[in-house]
Image (cartoon, rainbow, N blue to C red; front, side, top):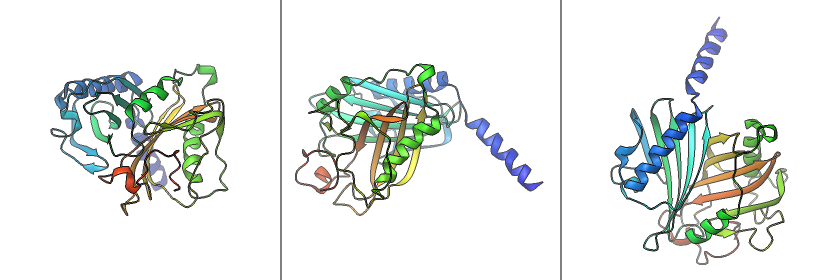
Length: 280
């Protein structure tokens, strides 16, 4: 009887984790409003044990980035009704202080349980908000027609294969052609938009840790938050990192990263303008 009881609990837990795309849209809208106004109180209702982090560290939402009114020049969101999670990418082109921000939310179907925000600006990995906005504008992140969509398993597997390749050069990653990677503002496809340049400069001895997912079948996208060992050469701790993948017909098409350097300009490298690869 015990296995059946455990199965029942698992099914019940799974059922309560599901939420509607409408609810997730509303939660994202509340987040965008809060960030635009600099008013965290504009957010959806928060759970009693709500958790807020910036750069993967506990932070005070009342004095963090959400307390700063920002003019958002670009935003892109994906929604996962199965895990009841959402991810939003923001670009702020304010010449006084530009940002590229990634925010992941966990919800319970009625309230926000957790917000994990990665805030990048000058000094972070290859940071250039203008470049990030420009190259993003060249890409197509439209909703994928229903009869052409991949399953969430295929979408997540594509992102996982990319990270698994970081530890094992023999792993096959389903790169499409073309495929381009956007890091901080540097674009691997800048010189050849018709080629697969996502495979440039990948490491082969790094095991990323603590993967957290947002999978959106309609958008053909998966966002994965990870701890990235070696991202910041000036730190022994895994660097806070977000990768957003677009998957079309089972193949990787676009990759967007948001990677913070934790107070070490250029993540410990003197030259922060070289082609992305993290292998130098």
